[in-house]
Length: 361
Image 1 (cartoon, rainbow, N blue to C red):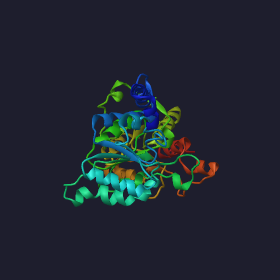
Image 2 (cartoon, rainbow, N blue to C red):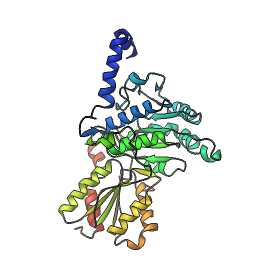
Image 3 (tube, rainbow, N blue to C red):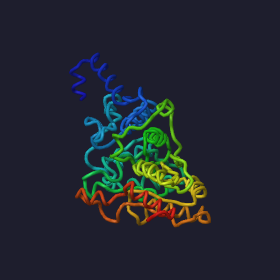
Image 4 (cartoon, rainbow, N blue to C red):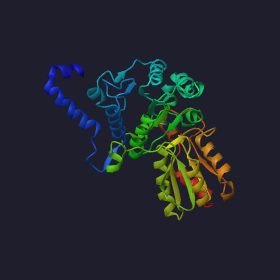
């Protein structure tokens, strides 16, 4: 790509770069909707323009424009000094990025999938997450680890699992899981500006989805607070708590439940650590019933922690046992029919909510 710019000459290359930047980083800004891919891309570009300490590192983030095109146009605008293509060595480039964070830079590390971050778990947990505490608050690590998390489609057990519960159990990390464009822009900007390491769990199957945006969401200084959930739909009969892709499923389930006379409140967690216990408890106190929804495995899952919140903060208000909707307790199957059965569906959420309301047949 840089060779192409050189062959074009300075004037033509500058114009072409401007077209790339407008077309890729702000492609939907003139409309009322934006894809999650463009929301993430524009947030990255704006934060890199705002702060020259921010840089991007990962496999294929530069010349190839990112495996999922989240880093489209960034190499052309910011150059190879701030957009680093790395070898296939997660432990190596993650260690480099953590060291850069310790020295005062603000790395954004892209994992092609969070499954591959397992190769770098020592750097993430033992170096990035624990050093602030171990240094008595003298060494911070402002770093974002981002990439697709959770189930994809047809890629088998080693590329399809949710790491939300894994990372959210670790002190020293903040763990974010966006759903729509508002989440993607606001939370990514907040994560990049945060002084602590942030795990930013995206979902591959949401990248191409479009969601409404307004001028506020598109503002270059728009951020969302890490640690605060959002009530996506008000309800009075049952609370459905979810994150990432499962928020969309929960909203669909709420529509079905409404047609059956059940008013469901849907909460988008947005952040898994710190968990917004107050919003969860408030909703339980109002509806007296709770359904948690996640793609991850049932044992020690995010739903287990949400159940603990219900028990510790709102037990006396519960009129029914807490229902958990999770992925199956198996590695993700490769066969399409089995894969479909391994993850929650809208019908699963509806059934759980009906059971909580003592309406199941």
